[in-house]
Figure: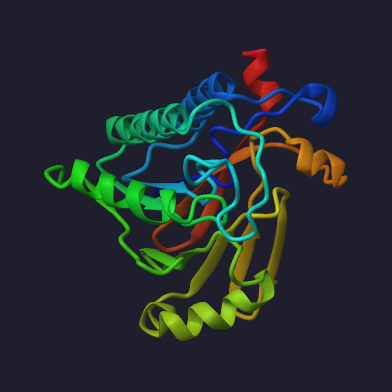
Length: 258
């Protein structure tokens, strides 16, 4: 078995107010929810040989000292200095890696570029963790320089893209063309994305595109835009031959109840 643990659009460093978006979010809450949700997913998922830990883009809410999106220059609600945001982002990712190594004999870390952190997750966080674990043979870091990532577990191809560059319906043909050998070597294929902060799943010819929700709260921008979705994070289990065989879904309410 292989367990995929995914955090899409976690937005570490975002500041949200419950009177606007329905729930609070800051650095302390993000760290607490991260540790609690990962522990719950690992505990509830079956024992598996491999873990894929996927930081699915927008792991950091802002990409530098100025709190704005890299491309559109939208002003962001940020919780504190960029140095504090980076500290929580690094320590959080290290926690996931350490816990995954305790439970699985091999771990693959996928650090994906997002539209909020093109330089953060897209470059330095990925490079830093590759250097940090270069002497740990049980952990590998996916080093794709493009925002398209793939992994294989038995007869299943797993593709990853944040969703900010290519629309969901265009992903199947792109991955078939970008990774033809892996596509041809597998019978089951999934492409995982986020970006839109809500769940969606559609099967195309030969591949299923799974759009993940986010555990993060809504910020003022999302609340004023009228975007409402259930918050969650999920772990998916794959069998070498049979493909996807199970899921675990963790919501903020479950963490609060615990």
